[in-house]
Length: 431
Ligand code: HSE
Image (cartoon, rainbow, N blue to C red; front, side, top):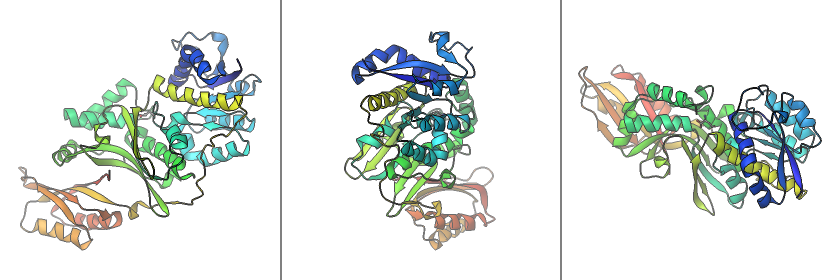
């Protein structure tokens, strides 16, 4: 049987998972493909730590460059992560005409455009299935399964750590800090947990999904990102009373000539499928013109689930090499449209507000008057009984309103001396 040589750079959690997957399922993969991916070597700065998978020491090297250069290595699998040396290795491999498989979401979100261009220039595959959704084949679904569709919206729970925290805050009534400590102990948070809880990991993934959906790279730094760090139990409880759960959503929605990409804790109706995605699980709901709604669910992180998707990319690349069909599916298939990123000020949605006020005559009239002045209509309203300090919480759900109007209204409301900060504003998902 024809073979293709595989070189892996990065022998961390996912790298070891991919080696394990190749060792256990390599023969099955070969039968399915008609070509056998054969591991030729693994490069890492640390080749001493025992990864518990029985890889013979001759397979290990600290010289990634030499691995890329080897004649018998046909596919480079980059699993170091980050935007430093990983980028150099990927560029070197592509320039040598060697196809690359990577799980590096940050690199693709920040430098995707130049890497996609390099892949096209050298007519060499660049696969990144494991960069979004871990074991969920969402990238493949967008690149191939939904290729005949116009993508209208993508809404996803794309970060397992945040979802774990939000789930336990809701189900067990625990405060944010307590659950974050547990998540760190359990080891699925990023090395820098700020990436998870401040929403940037979700933003990286949202930008990659938007690029696939609309055939162009969007600028990460222009994406509106809010994390879950400031979320308090009161809002989780209020949302539940109103029939919602709070999820950290990456939202991508196309308008006529623009695309909205945003990340924020968002109220999701309790009866929607996204609301029932709990713990470390991820899910992505895609709305497209022909298939309508499709949903993809699974483990968004972890050694073997992520390795599963890396193996699928190795399989694709091996097939393409064997059939001399490089770029059968280009990394970002152009759609021919030129869509701009929409400013957050221009989005429209329903809002949840919680405003703490002095319980005095006329307060409610002032607040609702200001909302009306900015064209914001109230859909429902709850006033909580004042606490012992005499502060009353107003919980308001609005009809759809423009973000810039909401910003102006909240700025004006903050000027009232009877309003006690912080006022909470959360958006409600359109599902
Ligand atoms: N830290 C990420 C998460 C891992 O919690 O989902 C995968 O990107």
